[in-house]
Image (cartoon, rainbow, N blue to C red; front, side, top):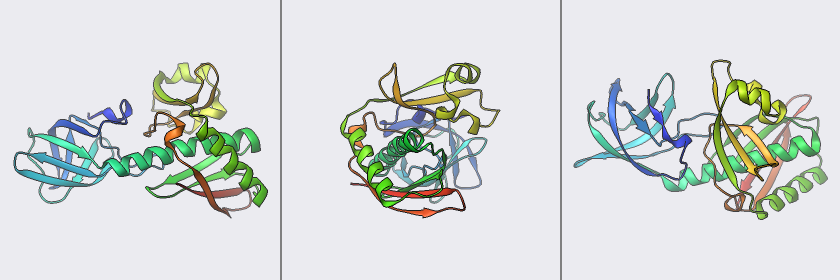
Amino acid sequence: MTDARYLDDSTRLTFEATVQTVRGTNRVVFDQTYFYPTGGGQPHDTGTLSAGDETWTVTDVQKRDRIEHVVDGDAPEPGTTVTGQIDADRRHAHMRYHTAQHLLSAVLLTEFDAETTGNQLYADHAHLDCAYERFDDDDLQHIETRLNELVASEMPVRWYTLDRDDAEATLDPERTRLHLLPDSIREVRIVEIGDEDDPFDRTACAGTHVESTSEIGTVVLTGRTTQGASHERIDFVLE
């Protein structure tokens, strides 16, 4: 089982790991990794692996029963110790967009009673789907203004793990969206934004995030589209 170290430290970009197994010719499984695999609407990290004079480009990272790193060419042999280097710009963009999505989800739930039903982020744009009939231009302007107020307030962002039963017994299920997690997940990672005693947002999430809303940058809502009878999609970019 690969130790998913990105869950603890989102800022670590260089690390050493040992190849445990190779699947096929180019799917590498390590004892530990800081590379983020595709999941939860967040794309995978890219970067490089190096050992001695050899270098491999990591083109994809997927989490199945194990975390697999897809490399160009033939993979390093099992037992090889490699240095992993994560693409810093791509990772930080994903961290900013994922944290912004949490703020957007919280604003929509608090002010419009609109629950997030899906999201997808990239390095240069993102969208969020929610259960709501129709936003108008005034709604979008209000949401954008509110988001940028929250960004400017420099709220801290933190994460920790809880036993699933404890989380369900003590946390607001509507806000944390614990019901969306498979029953097989018995330890949940909670991401909080804001004051520890009364956070603005508290959500179960296994993504990577910035440590302060000030790192997000200016949020610009670029449009909305109707996704069926009672669902809306909001598109946004970060400047």
